[in-house]
Image 1 (cartoon, rainbow, N blue to C red):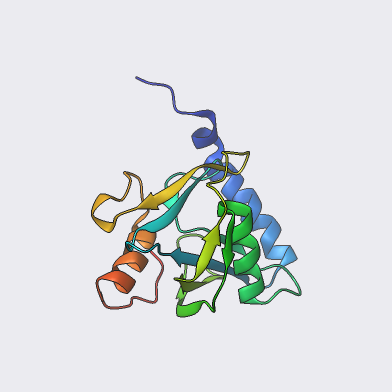
Image 2: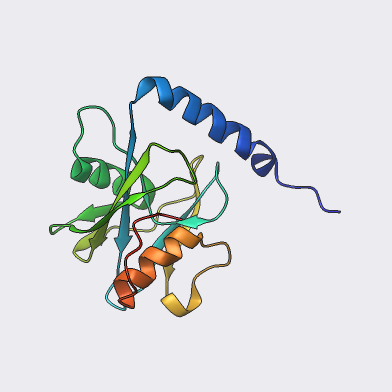
Length: 161
């Protein structure tokens, strides 16, 4: 039997601690995610150090921050991606898998610039652009669903999972 990476062993505990903290710090958790598309309709995905799978870049909306401000901040932090046009709201989703209070706004990004791919760091261990037909193993179901809704006109399902 192979040994699980250390982060995967502690992932459920870390998730529970984060949401326990969030219950007191925030009445409801709000997040943003970006479906960043390049000229070939490849999708930018990130792999975090603290949670399994490949995800759309994004994160929590901080106190005093708008959804778009959060989106811009997270794209710079996770992908060195700077918006050069207006993001298009794809939808609002209830992420009951994470918490009974977690909601995510997903934006489609087609106008952007990136000076270079970011180096791996303590939060983002890998990232890249992927063709829809060649998404990396471990791309989460919610991430796949959002990609197919946008690029293959699949019906929008308001539940993230």
